[in-house]
Image 1 (cartoon, rainbow, N blue to C red):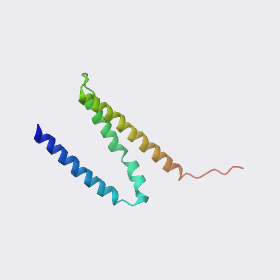
Image 2: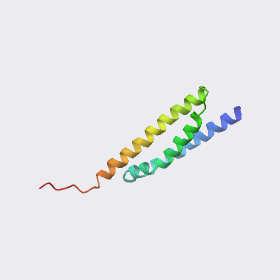
Image 3: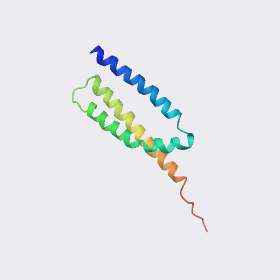
Image 4: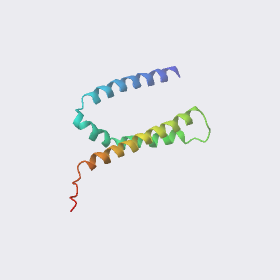
Length: 97
């Protein structure tokens, strides 16, 4: 039990450092398109959270899975809103006569 917890914490810590370094190296002009393109990955997180939260017994795992579903959906919806707003900037404006 303790070995699995320690291994999970090590993976989480290493992933946090690697993710921070990767995001820091992305130039600001590419940051928004790359983040909006990662909505598919967030969709996979929603499916995983639904699988965790799908149990019928209310225990800590189901509660954490439910919170994960909510947070992942906020991430997906926010990403699509940012993408839509970004794409609106590139549309040609109609000239009113």
